[in-house]
Amino acid sequence: IHERLVGSEMCIRDRLIPNIKRLMALIAISLLVLGGIFTGYSYYQDILQEQQTSMQATQNDPNRLYEASISNALISAGPPGSARLHQWRVLFDKLPLSVNGWAAKTVSCNSKQCEVQWTRVSGDLNDFVSTLPEILNGKINFKLEKGLAALDLLTTHDLANFSKVEGLTESIDRAELVSVMHAQYKWGSLLQNISLLPKSNIKMTAPVLFGNSTASIDTLNKPLVKGTWAIEHELWSLPDLQIPNFVIPETLTIHIDLKANLNYKLEGSYYAKGK
Image (cartoon, rainbow, N blue to C red):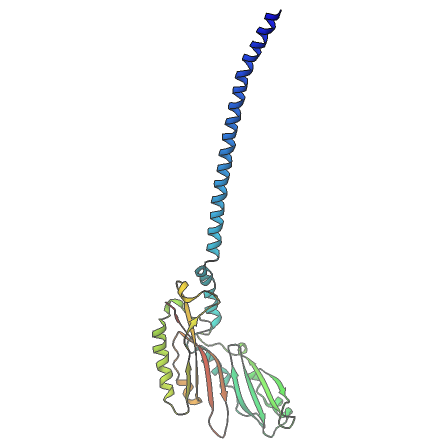
């Protein structure tokens, strides 16, 4: 009996040894598989992080952001050349210098409207309201700062109510813009010629980056720049002004003195390639 028990124990031990080896092998294989899965997952996470970083960098790329906004910015700037001057001229051709005892004092125009300030000479409010031409579509406001006797009137005229002129819906063509030096030579030369006229005054500023970008000109591939200018002179010289396609008139103010000359101040911007 003792020999049988000993033999049985040895038999069981012999069976357990390979089972343990098999188990250890399975554990080792499992660890290798888990290690491979972990390594693969870590590699996947690294790739995903690189892609996200790359996408974020692309989204924040100053050139991409600049290019995405510059087209709308150019459209918002308005029409280049003389189109806006011609649109203002449509109103001026219909505007009387005096209305039944009231005299036009200043005319101030922008891209949307013109505002006319009238000073009282002899007429009253009824005289003005009843005589102002309906074709002007003027909205009347009072300025009482000087008192009722020396009352000034303001009429506002929406340019959308007047006939449109050719080129008014156009915008600067980026492809046709010239270099800063060429723009300053061409427009600056014309301003210099105007400065030779008696009682004239001109101004031209150095250009800066155009658009809403916070980047610098050096970091952008295709930057556009914008400078400002102004002309002051007697009104007779305004119709002869030749405005190139990289220049935009923005505001016009006319000072009217019937005992002297009519003077104007025209202001705007010029545009060029920054590189």
